[in-house]
Image (cartoon, rainbow, N blue to C red):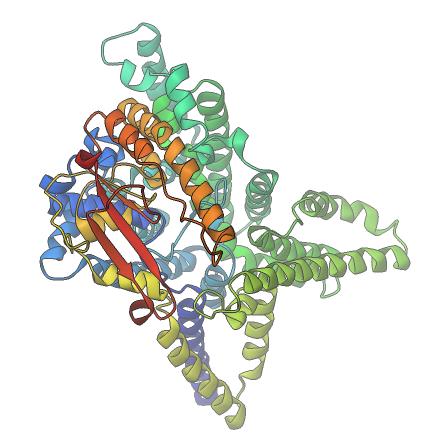
Length: 629
């Protein structure tokens, strides 16, 4: 019996590992260098080729690039491997380490059998935090955050076990990579220590002394007392809305509220190691949000705006997602399977996970949270019919969210004409947490000591891992092609001289990766506006100068689309005077333009991407030189 039990335990461990690998690879595919990965790639390329990229707007004035050792750590690898290959490999490596670090940390405060469920929850449930659905932990692309987050989770685990030297070393390494992710974790450590020993409140003397020095205008205090002037603030407030809590949407606030709700519940679990850490994370999250509201949204302190203390939500959200399975199981065990409060918790988790898919259920969440707290007082007063109505309402909410989700997905499917390169029906289905949860539950229940069941589940998982591995790289043809021509500065048939700045149709990756030349302007470069007034000023000036050419481009595209196939109608082209004015007003900064649309002047080079290259694309990029206007 003991041997059989041991074999079963080993079998479940193997099945569990296979299920984690399958879900991780399938639900977190790789789409290439995108989002913030572009900016971090730029920093690596700058370190590798400072002569050509040093004049780029994103780097020229310093900005955020001086706060990380990420480029120094990654750039040497470019001597042996291409940047796209390097970033792809490091994406899978860093996210794998994140899952290992998560498992190590979960073991510290939950029973061993819940490690598996916690990791599955981290894979299946949304990892987004903050405003505008911009950030998430364990992102599907490579940045400094990809390395800093697992280091911080390991540091957290060392903190729980009291290994202080290891805590400090891991935190310092993480902070040198991404201080904005590391600082909230340090403040959490302080909050936790304060809750255990009030003498740690003496730590408040540090910011208090800094405030006094600032009020007295002691030399050097302007570093932390600087406030955005009206002009600088006007440049950043619209392009950096995610850093201002008052600009967050109701859905963003509700996701924050749900994290606070679950941390509060975890903080009430007595006689568990989890309780005190949940309380520390809750205090840290509330403190961070209050400081952000006061010093960022209302007083506009530049240093605290740049520190983005609201990022404390990343570690709080991680804790909530990792502990949700344990908390729900605890609720069912405390009461019974038909208990309304337990199903309210399930509904809050599932409804909150659908907000990010555009499902308008956020308004139901505060009602459910209030109902959870007041239900014990209503339980004895409610009739069986009333309880049945509440349960029916929960079911209808879940059905409504599921229906709205699949309508949303179907519209996306129609928008891309059903092309699997852009939309996979099975992926959209399995990405819906309620469906993923049901399938996982069925699979776990199917595994048993019966040989046939075990063989069927094992075979399914092996096939699933093989399929997920094969489909993990989901870069489309365009992305693959762009990444395959890394460092080809003669792509237009002419040599672009070193340091020449290129305006490339709001592209930041193409000038850096393909041409290895500075980008004159792209919206992605706005990430540095918080940290440098000079960058913000110059970016605003360049963006304003592009207004007329963008207007003409949109008009010509519309006219050419309407006149397509009409005999005798000349092609609409961008006015050469508009381009000439743009070049002149750039103060000599702009050297070349790469446009999708023709200018009423001869181009000096063309890069044609036709069907043999990309299967079904047919794109022409036209290269123009400012000195020709």
